[in-house]
Structure formats: structure tokens, C-alpha cells
Length: 249
Ligand code: FPP
Image (cartoon, rainbow, N blue to C red; front, side):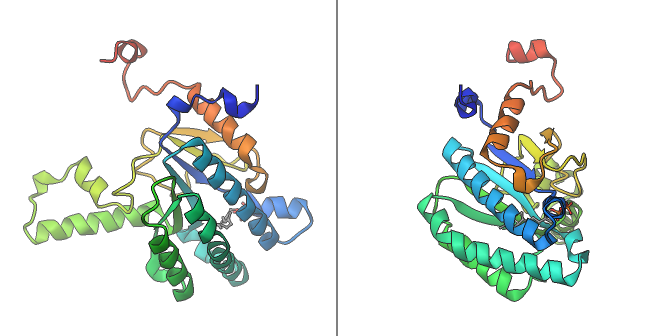
């Protein structure tokens, strides 16, 4: 049976988050430069966005550029920013046709102005779409996000809008960049690395983690479906016993 038909469409994760890793190593294997790897990585992005939309997944968050990535050589950072702009330019029309809504989380203040403008333009153009929500984590790090949430909550307390006792999980959730987005049930990382790398630290608390040796440019629909099948073979207990889950208590 084709792998897509083995997936139980009634038990899909609502939100899948992906650390797209291994573009550089893939390029090196091909005897090419790192930018070539990122370009190929953008093709995988397109394939996985299509697959997620077709399956009916609600949210797909992709770690496209971390806060730490600013430390890469200027040439590579510039090439990644140029790739972002050209991808948004090329793909926005198709996002609209496929009913995909674009969002982004991250410290956008430090993005080059042309990238920020392009990004916000595409977000605006797709804001009424009701299919897949594609969340690009751009200039993102989870510790940055948590610090920002702490500042916002502290400001509410300073302004006497809340008391310290009011601070709970929900209030932190509401002040994260992902306030309107449910937590991911599944997080995928490619390229054989077993790390979270400052990605969605709060939101991944109960997520299933899936690691694959495939490098990101090699990660296509088949590999995505395999990850979903693996996810569906797991039992999610949230600290409960199997018996409690069976009896729905
Ligand atoms: C990690 O590979 C990948 C990135 C830092 C950037 C991700 C960017 C893309 C997939 C391309 C464009 C994105 C969009 C949304 C159009 P790496 O460079 O860390 O690989 P390495 O660990 O093998 O060096």
C-alpha cells in the first residue's frame, strides 16, 4: 500500500514543527557550496508545505533562520536572506491558490528591511486563507521569545493590570509569539542531530520528537509521511497511565 494511504487521516497532528538541518552537509557531499544546499533546501520546503496542505495538517512551523544563524559568514547570511525574498516572491501566488496562510515568529526588528517588508506583504496577502497555516521561524530563538513574554508579563504587573498570583501557564502562552498557535504534537529534525537548538522550548514540552538521518534537501513527501506514520504508532500519555487513556479518564 502506498505510504500516504497508511496514514490515519483522523489522527493527524494538528501542528508539525521542523528543524530543517543539513543543507550545508548535503551541498558538501555534492561538491557544491553551502548556498547551493540552501537552494535545494527551499525545494524541500515547497514539497513539505504541499504535502502538509494536501493531508489537512493545520499548522506547519519551519525553523528557517535562528538567532544564532546571524553569526554565520556574511556571504551565507546574505544569500539566505536573498533566498527568502526570492522564495516569497515566487511562491506567494501559489500559497494563495492553495489557501495557505503565512505567519512568522521571531525577532523581526533585526531582519533587513527589504526582507521584513516582503514577509509582511505576504502575510497580509494570505491572512484570510483558511487552509494550512505556515509559520516561518525567522530570526527566532525560544529563549528570546520567553524573555519577551517575561517582559510583557512584568510590564502588566508593573502597571498593576495583574497581580503576581495571576501569572499562570495560560498567561505565559498568551504572551509568546505563538499565542494564537496550538503546541506542536510532533517535532521533526533532519540530519542526524539530536538537539532542540533553542527551538520552541516552551511549546515542545509534550511533543513527540522524531529524528532522521536524512539531510534536509533529501527530505521529501515520502520521508514526511514516514515521520507521520511513526508518530501515529506512538501513544501520547501526557503523564497518564495507558489504562487511564484507554478508559478516557
Ligand atoms: C540548516 O542547514 C538550514 C538553515 C540554517 C536554513 C534553512 C533554510 C532553508 C531550508 C532554505 C530557505 C527557506 C525557506 C523558508 C524558503 P545547515 O546550513 O545548518 O546545514 P549543515 O548543518 O549541514 O551545515
